[in-house]
Image (tube, rainbow, N blue to C red; front, side, top):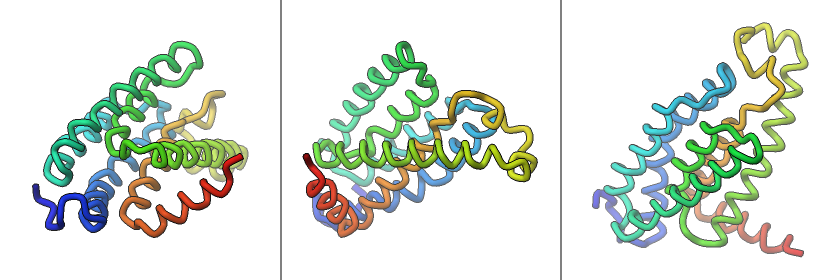
Length: 188
């Protein structure tokens, strides 16, 4: 393992997720741009994200955790394909979400954080996209973007925002604990 810290220490987790963040940022930028421009998430971007977790994850996190995280991919891919069939969720969105899933720790509190982040980013990205496409000066700057003209929404924006924010929270454990406390205090 290339992580210089004790395997399960908070420092090791922050270090690993810092590397994941640096490696995922350009892929996420590519996905967001591509989804806005073409309303498609390239398979190469999905494979690049998988490669990051495969190689960097193998080098940075304990093997047992690394192996179990692949279950996340299978579960999210199955859910994504189901949603593709019944709810018109894009196949690229389903594949990207599945490729991002191994980065998420297999803990219920982390699942609730990811779901809350996704809900927030979905609403925010949808509202921002609809607002910006109503401004002619903005659409003129990227007049070839398919997403300005389509009725459906480039969900890759929300998926990218969710993944990047989760990675940032994992790098900064105090921020993660604050979010966990906020979510715990809002339970009904």
